[in-house]
Length: 117
Length: 116
Picture 1: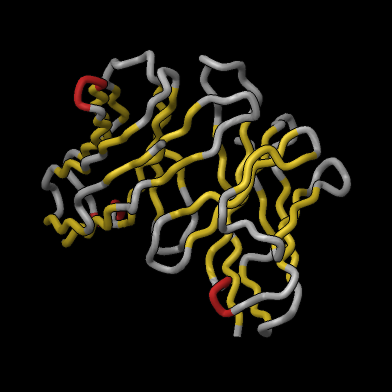
Picture 2: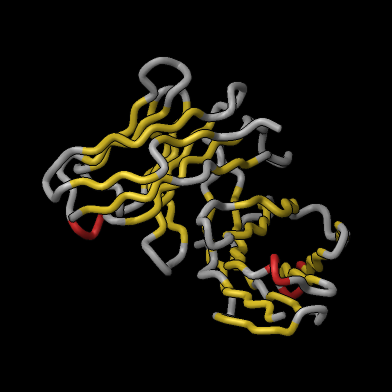
């Protein structure tokens, strides 16, 4: 069974520090996503990435956030200067390309719990 | 705009009871996908099912079954003979097909507690 892998599983960082969350999507998938879940709340969309560029982003994804696919296998989320309210579980996901009207397979990683202190 | 509502915030049942988790969605698109995910206490999101808008056939997988009704924009999830291991938060999600892949809109989740 193919899977999306995220590292680290838990990251603790000081406020104001930069963090990079890493994800290895499923190898033949073309669409990549980051989602965030603040403790006890719902899962929220941050950004989608296709063809080496951001295809869509939410209002949460401000200038402090950036994404990159540096080497064709990893997909990273960088938070430039972390704030306390960035503490959350961050999920990476990937989907295979499908034309409109066809099904897609969506796989989520196990998440990275980010704690900003 | 897309929206997913899960009216039940928390449900508690006793083991072996059947339980239905409700999901109501809103979308203007004619092509969309519906999902259920399970989030156990360990935090990961476990994929349970995907349904596309053209397939209203109900599905059964072991103790799990799903009832998709486009007329009421609902995609309800039933666990038969619940077990303690079913205790988790369950999320319903909606995705609309677009040119650049799909992003998911999640409902707020229903926390299911199955008591022994």
